[in-house]
Length: 108
Image (cartoon, rainbow, N blue to C red; front, side):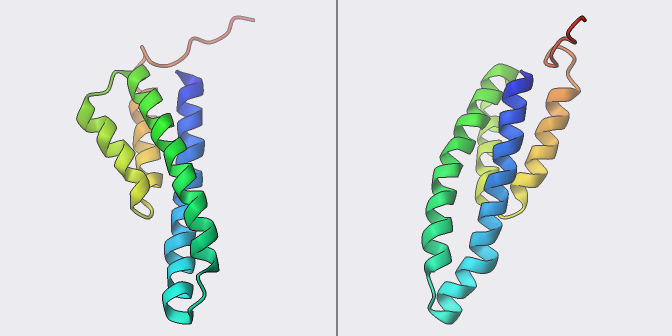
């Protein structure tokens, strides 16, 4: 469970940053200054990364036993700027506050 949560958290941040770059920098450059280079590069990267985000969210939701509604809402969080950061914090809290989902400490 811990590895699935870490994968989800990392990709949620990456997707969130890519989407902000796309919306805050890319879109104004494309439509305000007729320079689509950021949209063309970051847009494709965001699309690919969003697919990885969906896989990570699905994997985590399957392992955590979430209901379908929660899984879909978490998956949609990567489509709205800044929401993936909020969702990442909520998901981390959901997973870490349930003792049956947290990994066992390694004896050593």
